[in-house]
Structure formats: structure tokens, C-alpha cells
Length: 206
Image 1 (cartoon, rainbow, N blue to C red):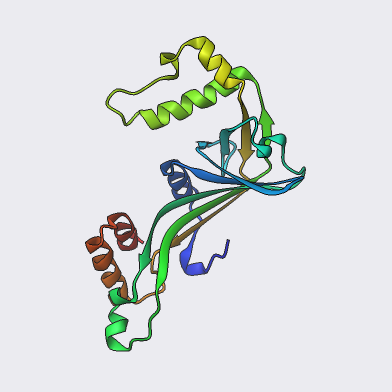
Image 2 (image 1 turned 90 degrees about the horizontal axis):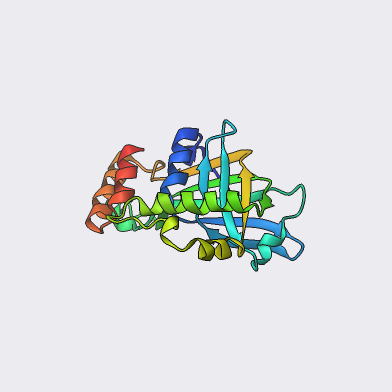
């Protein structure tokens, strides 16, 4: 990913935080049929250091589950808060008019070789952990054990698990760092008024 120094984020703890905060990732692999992308929820294990391992599953009929080209790294893309930035937010617009629109966003790219498995116990562990992660915020969480065991066993036969040990991790926090303090303050005010408090708070904290 294009990483100007002003927007680059290298702190592993912050990159991990962004990965865990995201609900859905884009998994890209090179196969015999070319590049394939799937949109899947992923788990992050911190080992091995320093970057950890991504874990997830794909539907067996998904062509991406047939395997990736050996020796070619896969890419998992995570996106955080984002917002369109109008030139109208800038103090510079009022002073000189020399401004153009842009987009602020958070993105994390994780690279590594992917491998697949179909062990039922490991697959059940993945779906259980994913379920617990996303159901934990609900008043009455649903659990994998709420469904009949034979039904879950049948569903597990329809998926393949994968692991992606991360060997390279890139983060981009494009939050108006290249603008003047006055322009940044204007963006924070403008985005807050437009309901983009998440991006506004990131700008203020960056």
C-alpha cells in the first residue's frame, strides 16, 4: 500500500487493535484462476510474535478454498473508520481557495502464506470463537451449543479453515496530518456536524 511518512502507522499494538475492531476483512489470494477475494470475519492470535496469525474459514465451494499459489503471499485487508473530506472544512479554502476534496481512512494490510485445514475440532473452535466474539455484545448471546449437535457437525463439513501467519503488517492512518492545525480543526468540526464522530476523534488524537 502507498504509505507516505505522515500517514504511516507501525505500532503493532495499534495495528492489532484495528484488526480486532474490524468486523469483516477482505482476503485476497493468487490461485490458478487468478486473483480471488473473499469477505470474511477473521480472528487474530498474537503468536508468533511480532505480528501474530489470522484465522478464519471459507465455504468449501468457494474457489478460493481450493488453495493458493505456493510461495505467493496472501493479503488480508482491514478497513477502519473513513469519511469524505470536503474542501469546505478547511480554513485554507477561505484564505486562498487552493484546496481539493480528499478522503480520510484507516487501513491495515496483513501479508503471509495461507494454509488450509479441515480438522473438525479446529473448525468447531474457529466458529465458536467467532460466535463468542460477535455475540458477546448482545443481551442474550447465541452460542454454537444452542444448535443441535448433528446440525453443527453437518455445517462444519461445508467449510475449510485457514491460518495466515503474518510476516508483514502495514498500517495507514490518513487523518489530515498533512494539513495545517487550522485546517485540521475545521475538519474535526465539520465531520462532527456531519455525524462522523469516529473519524473526527481519530483526527483529534493523531
